[in-house]
Image 1 (tube, rainbow, N blue to C red):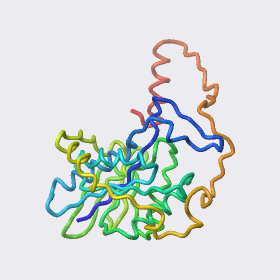
Image 2 (image 1 turned 90 degrees about the vertical axis):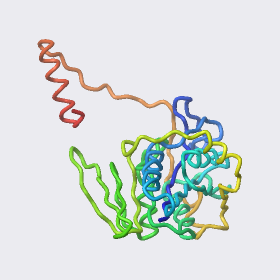
Image 3 (image 1 turned 120 degrees about the horizontal axis):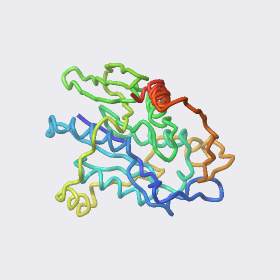
Image 4 (image 1 turned 120 degrees about the vertical axis):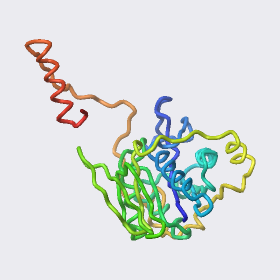
Length: 266
């Protein structure tokens, strides 16, 4: 079974964010981490591999700057078999449409049974790339996965999907794309041996440029991105919010609990 996990190197917001004059993120100037939803999806893939390691291959794929090699090596140190880095100057400035088109253009030249992506990236929060990849590849998609189980004999995937204050159980034929929530799985740590293997064997990560992608020029990079950024800022204005004055401490508790119940927090 071949599983491809799409991961993204995102800015570590604890270190602050920086923008270029055109409004896009200056990724080269910021500290970076593996996107949390993607990392949970990777863990889900590795757990599937644990069930039958001899017959399962996990490939991690990312699109980004050359330094995105770091998150691929991290994923390999966690247990993935190999990585693919898609990087080229002409791909810079891509929005969700151009990003999904580019990644789908790479996947068209790969073998896969299951594709796992994160629900969304913390730098964009759009939740669009995963479903768009599925649309480009004409694959069924199940989003907001809390649990993923594969039936190798039936060639199906069963997913527990988050839905408001309940969940769905959906089954789809493979190949299929699933988008994962961060709550899906607690990611494992890198192992010392895995770290040495990931960095000593440079051949574990393959680099593809524009020439390896099955995608039209009009759908890549900033030129192929229909999204227009009107303004970007690292300072987010907050609304005034709601002010209440309960009659007693007990009334205040009841009010807060009621609000939490409305939002399905409790």
